[in-house]
Amino acid sequence: MKSSSTLVATLGGQPQIVTFTLDLLRSRCEVIDQVVIVYLASSPRYSQAYRLLMGEFIGDRYDDDACHLRSVPIYLMDDRLSDARTPQEVDAVWKTFYQIFADLKSQGQRIHLSLTGGRRIMALLAFSVGMLLFDSADRVWHLHTPEDVVEQAYEGALMHVPPDSGVHLIEVPLVPWGTVFPGIKTLLGFSPQDIRAAYPSLLDETEWNCCQQVWESITRRQQDALRVIASGLDRQRAADKLNIAITTLDDHKTGILQECRKTWDTNAKLDIHFLRRKFKPFLSGIGEL
Image (cartoon, helix red, strand yellow):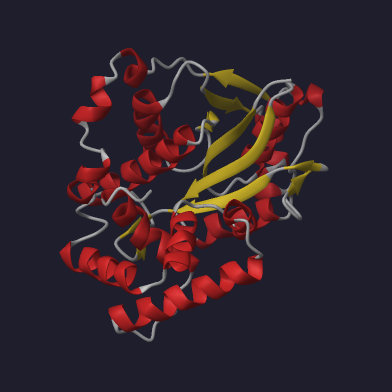
């Protein structure tokens, strides 16, 4: 049996692109235990597409097999992006893909990257990051869908098609330059001690200091919880990793958020997404992640 792997897919308004791709990979006996969706979440149309996808993953299962779905909306500072048109927006998209791929490879995951959905610039940026971080086991895919099926399946009207529909995957050749020339990764400045400098648009001096203040004020148990939360694990996996109950993890999260609210001096809603955005680069920068 093949080892488990993760499907990372860019998403626009056509959620069936993800399920078509996943179905085809599974038909090749690929074991996909996680699907990561990257999209510009300020678009109501894209958000609706993601909601349709959620209906295919009830109880962390897809077609009776264990498979976790998670989304990564792209942010610039605290704002969800609607497009990638400026250098700062492009930089935020590139760094988002870098974080996703680097995390998955550090976990030993094999990656399938689907580039058919969403803005073309997202596909180009994801591909460029893949060339740096992927190895020979990873794959990049484009989905071909015949015109008649495109019309029938528009915006999720069909989420699955039969094998004889003409829908098929095209593998996109990729040279994993980061494997061929390992020094490239070092030159990028993404070592833990340099993360702070590498993420100027995502974590400025004030934000860094706030993260440090919270980190130093919470308990060791809360620090353990914050590490796994910032790493991107869902609640069940985070609790399993710490060998604690989900309710205990939630108690730790509540305490951490209380410290954040005091430190950031805000009445705004703070949640798990806030913790991931703020503390992932910080904890990487201090060598805790």
